[in-house]
Length: 178
Image 1 (cartoon, helix red, strand yellow):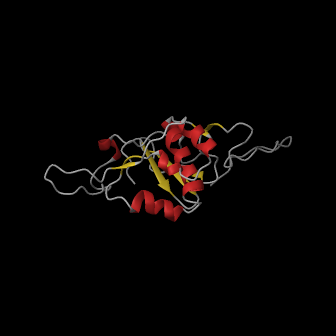
Image 2 (tube, rainbow, N blue to C red):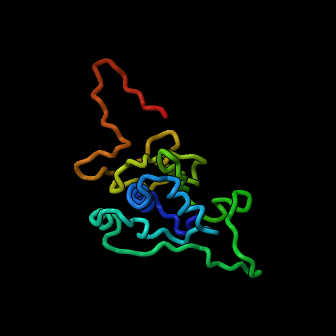
Image 3 (cartoon, rainbow, N blue to C red):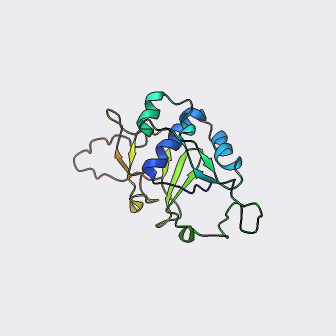
């Protein structure tokens, strides 16, 4: 899926998480059909219409009360008048298009790829609270680490960041593996 205004994780992840949890009713296939299969070229911008069926209080927290529609790139016309086609990996690269982020929908969550640093990234669980604040620094999104959370929603810890158990004396702590 190509989104012209791809945005940083702090902007796009809350929208995608809330869309999955509310508008698409935890159905990643329905979300995939809407975002990928049902558009010819891609998206200019993902809008607040993805938050349909989300609680009004959540929509307000995520958007600051603003509303804007999603817009596709399907209206584009090429210089020779032919219809535009989707970009493929062989047609262009992230560098040529100045793309910094990739978001890949998986059954378990959204993989966030810092395209300037890696070809893969950590997966943010679909159960993560959309109000979670994420780090936008590309180097923070290592495929070897957990999604970089700046701040969990007040009074709650993100679902993907389990509370660490206190270490027993003399017992080394180890990082969790995927």
